[in-house]
Length: 481
Image (cartoon, rainbow, N blue to C red; front, side, top):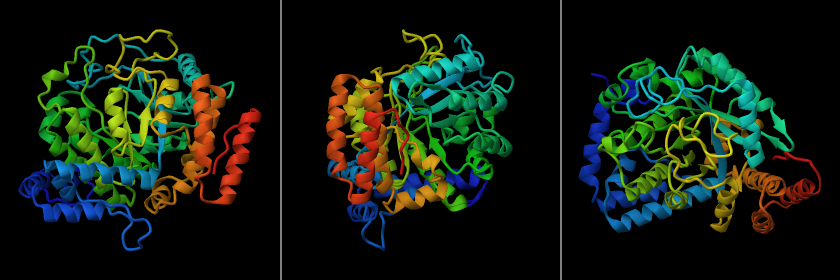
């Protein structure tokens, strides 16, 4: 029997089934233990000004106790502290990105995904000219940050194809548009291929575990290379070996029981910290959604919105430094609630079909899943500002080399706000000048003026103001701290 060891590089030791079961039993026994819960919540509270505690991350057992607790008053405290943590680490900024689907060719048999090898979905793979058209369409909306997606197919989607697409994306510019950060969400691969991705200038490598329950994982992935649970689960360690120090975790909630998945997710974050000294740069929270020949009602582990929101809040308490991502899988209503409990990144105007952005009408025949929030990027930006959030298109940390442990040291100390806040305002100004509707532009300029006054450093505030005036008055772009 494998023994739990967060420093181990073996999947069955750092995601240990027996440890998860014991954790769930511990959480159930203590879910009404108010004294313990008070201690856990006090530990989680952010205190950047107190040297002995910068807002400690919770263990997977502590976080599981909070998730199991059903006391309404405790839940309200969890939500409140989650919001406090997000504001302490990331301020009122919300980073915006878009997914770009390159190819839906796939050799895996994943039963929950329409891309599976026997799926009826029309197969499509973008040429480099088509990639360029997609990128221009995204630039013309105002996007600066993409997450590229592709099915696993060594013949149709080899690493060389992915690398060529990355080069095309970075080299494509239209008017004032440019994609400044490409995150990559592709299948688990070798350390050498991760090294090649790093050399290509990617931002974060993202890979969803789908489920940490090994027995369920094998049933849900009956055929194809993804069937190898250990190889998939150990992918982030190979990515670190290949030099990628910004990695993104996630599970597909609804495939298995959420408390098990939650414990496994937090254990994976603990493992990255223990083994590599760098936790996950991001954690995504997708839920199973309807898609071509996929009915989410088939999966009997679906979770209601209220539980889903609490999961996000508990993740924020357990991994306070991580960027948390919610996609357009979720409705405007759910995303609004999620922003109050710790989400720091959202997608906007997403199309999950291959080649969807260059088409005037949203195509549905090659979609990976239904998009619930179908608003334009301008509508999303406007909505964020109305609700007091700064829409940020910033990519400065990645491009200034503030990745991995360098980013984490700044983030965990609260110092990241000194550069991220003005960077957000400058990139928002770029969007307002180049792409926004008149209503959004007017609202945005008022927000930028108000937020500039909140920058504590006079010199940084003065430089940011000069740069913002330069953006408004000329075609000068891409200022950053």
